[in-house]
Length: 199
Image (cartoon, one colour):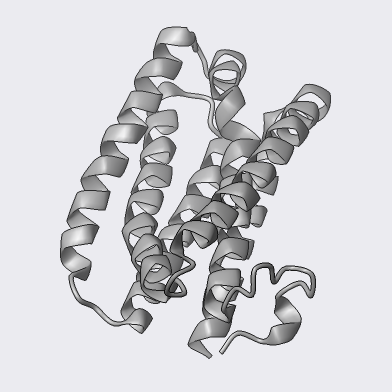
């Protein structure tokens, strides 16, 4: 099981089971990393991509969404009734791919490479999401489902809001490369609770 020392002591209301706490902590890292960059994505394209403009930003984000949907449908069918270990392995794989995508975007300056690394990010989230969501749904405490989904949303959105503000500040002061490298690192931290669970 996940080591008690890894989960913050104050992070227990309302008596969440250990897996739910670990999942929410992992999602905090995942969505914070994503919102370091996503809200200022169009500015990144215009500033860092050769010939970048609003149209390219919109097209590449549409491409991202379509690739994500495709992978979610494929992985959702592939997982079926797989056990926890299989779902965790798939989730870890997806999160790792997202981090590689962020790292690639940090050094991207052409439209072609932009689409490649956006596709990588999209495939990663498309691989991880069905597995993560299935695990969370299976481990919710009976009778507390709505409150635990609410806590998940609250924690995730607070992280997203904080990350958006911090990402904008860093991008303005130091450029997009450190923002994306930091997003990659934070995203990798989302793997740790799953590794503890496997052990």
